[in-house]
Image 1 (cartoon, rainbow, N blue to C red):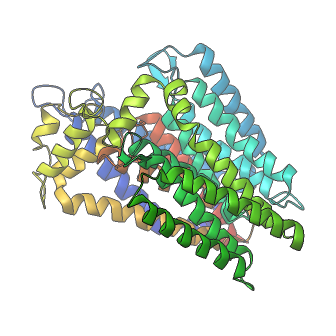
Image 2 (cartoon, helix red, strand yellow):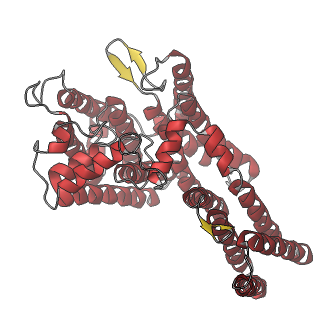
Image 3 (cartoon, one colour):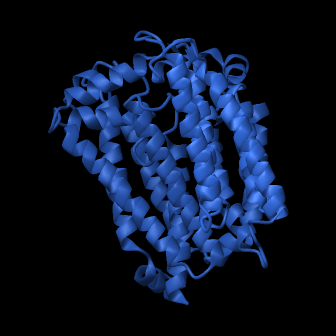
Length: 482
């Protein structure tokens, strides 16, 4: 036991631990600023949020000690068991958890409230790493790719059933891991394209350019341009097919523009015709040259068009009214300063009022007067902006950037596939949380309610992120022991 302690101290990555400590301490001070009331309990009173978070931080150190003392092989051997237990807990939560703020995601045990979804992230990362490190695993086979998706989507679906959309969307981060491990870039392109098509079609859905619906035209034009780009990538040795498609696209649009000077032209139908002709041409090339990638481009184009015309149905029939309003406010389609847009507007005011250097610790007026709802949880970054200003906000972002880059650096150095996949999972989850949370607070993304790691108040979130991070640090330490 003494040898293991010595080896851990000598091999663990102290740079990442230092970053963790700095962020946890900075997070505690931010929670103090967001929740402290001068005429109420003190900062260290356990009945207040700062005091309660301090207890969770202390217990996190106990967790860290346990994680580091366990043999690194423990996490590999028991990955599926841990995953199964957490998934069972997620399913139980759907039926046993009381409804709190419209969702059933918290298990209440006496005075203790636990959110299993926060622990499902590290369990999913372990299971995915276990699968992808199995003997002979190749992600590009249908069976293995399907199994990987199953591991990712099972907890995601369970969390959606709890009506925790934000926590469920975090699992999209695992696709970055799949891409690193050999997933086709076309899958990643499809996901990014779907988001872009949804946003653009919604943003310009009611805008007309003459008789042309602008939203549909922009998306269809993007589809055609992607067709041209993919054709060039598929057949780099002979750029002729891409030149044919690109040249035809330019000529058709030039002709349509000239005609539009004299007669009304619906460019949506023009683009439809272009895409249809392009697909026929690519199918011809696919059969003639036996290059099946051309057929995949055709499939992408058809699927994209189908997705475009399903956006309205998904938005109107599947999304909840409050989710619809949040998206409309984020895209500037609705101005609801007293409703769905209230949180974001107040958050922007708080951040902007901080100026360059901020108002100082416990001196934020917006946070003291409780103008920003959830200002010590999902909107904690507005407290940082108001009290510490641009300099403090930038420092927080720089800390996260350094940690994420450090995790990627360590992941690349791993000798085992298990440790590498798990390391990339950790980095991807932190990146997703950071990007969405900050984007949400400053109005760039819809409000979906996910915490900022190590800053937002909450024991489950703090424990979940701590376990996620320190399991990887234990695996990395084992690399140096061998």
